[in-house]
Image (cartoon, rainbow, N blue to C red; front, side, top):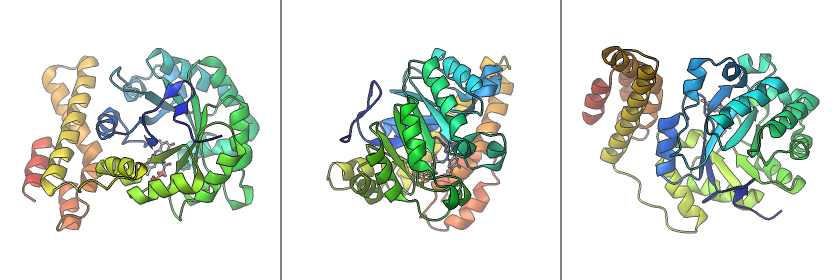
Length: 337
Ligand SMILES: Cc1cc2nc3c(=O)[nH]c(=O)nc-3n(C[C@H](O)[C@H](O)[C@H](O)COP(=O)(O)O)c2cc1C
């Protein structure tokens, strides 16, 4: 299959996708990445079972809006029944694409038979994909790894199984479960998957600069490139990657003032969304503001630190920033750098 710009019936405006990143790829993050030009921004991993039990915190995680060009929800779960029901709930709430997490290496997910544990039981994984694709009429993508470890490498078989079970695209993160995020991602495996299936392939792993993304596209023939860690504190990488895809000169790096303004706008938006969530829960305005701001600041401190990369005295600034707990303190601190 030649490279395509479609996933199922969805037409994407370019080949750059932003990854599901638990704790980071919330609505504020997706708005930012979309504004910088990403074609599709996956949301945070959501437990299908918790969705089925109407857990209000999980419903908050599913904070998708009509403004999003393509509302992509990632579900995690072990059972076909919960995953199918969870996909239906996400669809009813406006999802336009469902991703199935079959690659998460985290022990607490893995022990529950979720995430990458699906790669150890390909029959069960197939049942999950078939149940979800039967339950919703949305495109379903499947994100997985090379296998649990080198001895049980099964990514080609897994990709072909996903295609046969109805997946609209597959996304390969070129590492084993046992590697977590260490070592180099294997891009050759992405090229092999591209040869082995007839659905679009999303390549993932180690996109830290524009040249990485352009090289991955060229070397593997994949249809889309998905970036995660490289975008933390650096949404400008999106414009750089898109320029590289089009053979254009890279845009100028932002000045420190622009980086700080962007970081603070990102934090402010997160605060606003967290406060809104609490107002929806019925908290009074003052409590919602206080609790929402505190939650957002604590949740976003480590991402704020990522924006400091490359600045003078970044290491000591990060240590200080991690101790701050309200928006104004962070704003004063960053403007004082
Ligand atoms: C903090 C963190 C959280 C992540 N959460 C998820 C997740 O919820 N779902 C998922 O499929 N992958 C998750 N990933 C994996 C990324 O989506 C991606 O596959 C991986 O980081 C490799 O891409 P990169 O080299 O561009 O970072 C996470 C990665 C990190 C670093």
